[in-house]
Structure formats: structure tokens, C-alpha cells
Image 1 (cartoon, rainbow, N blue to C red):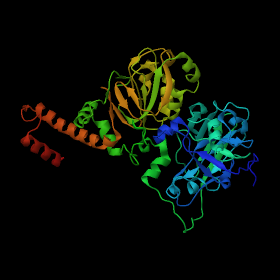
Image 2: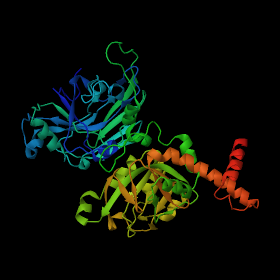
Image 3: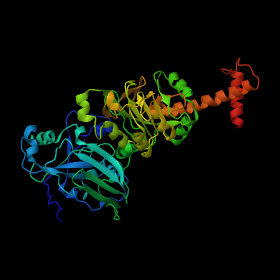
Image 4: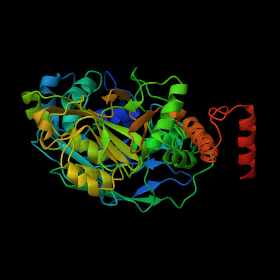
Length: 485
């Protein structure tokens, strides 16, 4: 069958990492673009099903912009590269992570299967490639949103780079990368990719009813593959950015396990602070912030947002519209805490009630900013744990430029990494490294249990001598009491 747009690419070239948000999500920022090829037989279009192979569970979408080559390009410089473009359209770079182990690097069986590259429904021509908006929806809910102004490598550079070593022919497609938010979808899910001005590409996921033949490599799911497939949609599995720019080790299927989450919600930040200090981590308490709702507890993982000092020309270029602040709110996943670095600047607001409500509707676990909070009285009626420096009526553009997200930030004098665990109560907020959260939660719960025992004995009239801290005699009494419970 012929593609409705008449597309018949000799090759489909896909970029690995190209959006800043996706690079932060993956925990690495490439210095130069890298690519893989998708066979032309993977081409599909809007309305056609995407078939998940039998035995697979990790089929993930990646909303992208496809660059349609209009004129032959061979060794063209960036300055004239866009002259070889016919237009742009929406694409979805589907892949099954169950086959990632088979063809590392090439992605042949993971992303080259029939129908895994739907493209369309129309071609956008004469558009500014630096201001294209891409959105992906799953079952009607926004899953990805980004503007091409956050690309690491512009379309002109991609074409020039590729044309140094291969000839791009008319009809060839270059998939320009996906932003943060790609995740696993299931049979019955409907994925739509929208390139603003070019309509929506719509595909439903279905399960293959045929068994996969026994010869050749078989699907295999590992913790690493699962973490990569789910990406930021499951914050617990995210690869987080380290100070060296390398990816931290994935935390497994659920870095905040149910028992750990329950323990964190039952103990005070003071007790957690004590446990962190015992492990040599002294700088963990976010200073200078207050809760909008002291009655709410907060437990979640960090999604970071960085503000830089105001420079009017820069704000005019990137501060308006769907800026980094709004994009970050729209990228928030359930269980994440929005952590804003405002440099302790109290001369403007950093977040208002509308965006806070949007974060809450997206499942945010809380908000922490060391700057000002706009519409602060409204936060008293929001069931969103929120911590802030001061109330302030002025908009962020008075003092800040919203710059980027999912990078290491400083908030209230504490370094916060994407994926760190934050716990807040009426006293304040502590930051816990994900690798330590299970043992800290366990030991904090034990510490508070001991302190309750001590408190009860003091209430009964016992002296603190030998009881606080407990000597051997009192320790044995305590252990006996625990055994009897």
C-alpha cells in the first residue's frame, strides 16, 4: 500500500538524543549527534495499528518530528542545509525494549519492525524549524510537549552532518529525536503525535495474536530495559544526572518501595536529618522555606527546574509562552516533587496557583522553591504540599529567566539532583539520596520507635539516667517489649 503522503524513503535516519529534556532524563548530554537506521518497511501512517509482538511487554512510543528531504543533499554546509528540506511532519518512533539486548546500537529488531514508524498526516511547509511545537498524547492525556528551541542539534546541523558521509535523497526521512516523557503503552492504548500546524498522527496499539517463531533471538526483559522503557513516566526508574554528567544507577522497579514510602510518611524530618548526619551527609535540609499547608506530608522524587537572574533580552527570547517553567509542569509525573532553584531571590514569585493546580492534576507530590510564591493564599485550599521562601505578588519575569529542567540545582542551600527523594513535614524539607532511602527510612522508623518507648517511660516517672540514651538494661527491656507486641 502506498503511503497517503506519497512517501517512499530510501532510508529513515533517527537521532538518538536531541532534546535537552530527554538528555537530562537519560543522564547524558552528547557532544555530537549519533544516529541509527530504520528500514523503510517500518514506515506506516495515521490510523494503522501498531502491533506489539507476542511475548513482549515493553512497547514504547517516541513522538518526533520527521524532516522530509526534498532535494538531494551531499556534503552541504549548515548554512544551506535547510534548502534541501521539503517540509516537516509528525512521526512516532515505536520500539520494543524486549529486543534491545539483541541489537545494541543498531536497534534493528527493537525499532525496525513493520509499522513501527508511522508518519503524517500532513507535511508542514515554510515553517520556522526553530519554533515548531511537538506534542504526544496517550488516550487523550498529554504525555510529551516540547519546542524545537530546546534541541541540542538543529535540523540544519543534522542534515549537514549526515550529508558529510552519505547522500540524502529526496523522500528520505530524518527523525529528529524525542523529548522527555516517552514511556510504555499497552494494547488498546491510542497514541497521537501532533506537530502543531500539521495535524495529529493517530495509532492504536494492538497485540499480535501470532506466536513468535522459536528460531532466532527471543524477547527478554531486564531491570535495565524496563527502567529505560518507562523513562520519566516512572520517576523511580529514572536514570538521574550526576555531577560528572554520567547516569546514576537505575533504582530498580520502585526506588520508593511501599514499605519505605510508609516509613517516610510516619517519621519526622528531624529524625531523617539525624539518620543522614550519621551517614556523613550534613547538607540535606532545605533552609529558608515554609509550608503552605503544615498539615500535609510530602514524599516524592525530585523533578528540578532552574531559574537564572533576569536579563531582559534573554527573557524576551525564551521567557514567554511555553517556557521552561510551563514545560516542566507539563512533564511532571505522578510522585514527583517540583524543585525550583530561585537562588534564594525573594523579589518575585516563582510559581502561581494555576501552574500548581496543573502540577497537582498531573500527580505531583509537592512543590519546593527557595523563592517567592504567587497567589499564596490560594495554596491553603490546594491539596499539594508546597514549600516556599516568601509570598510575592510579582511575576517571575521581574527577577528570573526560566532556563532548564532536570539538571542539578541548588535550593535553600542544598544540592538537589533529579531523582533525589524529598520528604517534607511542618518543620521543613530534607533531601535523601535514592541509594540510601530504604535504609534511612528503616532506621528512622526504628529510632522513633525507641524514642516513643523512652517517652512513655519518662511519662511514667522514670529518670533519663541510663534511659536516654538506653543502657544495656533498658535496651533489653525495650527489645522484650518489641517482641511482645
